[in-house]
Image (tube, rainbow, N blue to C red; front, top):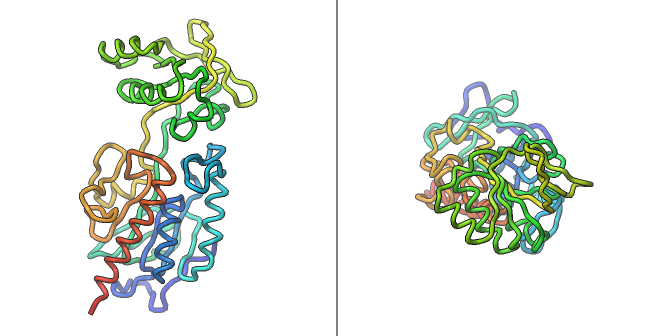
Length: 319
């Protein structure tokens, strides 16, 4: 991670016709790194800014990523960064992008107290932050036997006694999904379930127990869940837990820049080509745009965004 490179004509007043970079990428996870790879191969001058806080940092391994199944997440990122070193036009910087201003398809970014740098395009690959329940024992088990994604981790605990944590439709969706891996399911809502009578009947018809009592703690041993203990003292044996709680944008840059959102957590890129947003020159890719939050999909979206970015730059430069 070196100092941010500046263009030779850079001074206190930015020259909007000669930005420091073709593209600034905010976020160095699978989406950002995949975009950097494609753009590096297009000879684009790229700056990747990353805080080093990936969403899947608690996971022991990536799963369902073709050719990288069961690779530790940090190993995937390390390998990707190492491979990007062959592209001289791609730079990394370990720091937070505090603010971005846009004007006429140009962007000016302030990065962790450094002087502003400019670019022709901006890609937000900033990901999400998950709201983790404040339950005793939860943090110690998270990533080992407490999981977010059944598609990532349910295969490893298929057929076991599984707990579900959540409320309302989110909890129902998790319960429905997990029926593919186990028939021994209990839904814990830690208070009012916010479920309709029809939802409750559906759970009962599918032999999924519902407990609305508040949870006292999760009991585990060496990272493996053993039981969910309720406030009333009841101890219910379980071997793994999947939770579905709200998540939100890790960065507020999309909001500051005026992006359209398709729901409370996802930037809307569906109405535009190649992960573009409603802001000219601004693209978004990865978990901050989608409903299917897989690392392999984030990487694909990053590559797609890079294609769109390079296409727009070549169109802009055509005489």
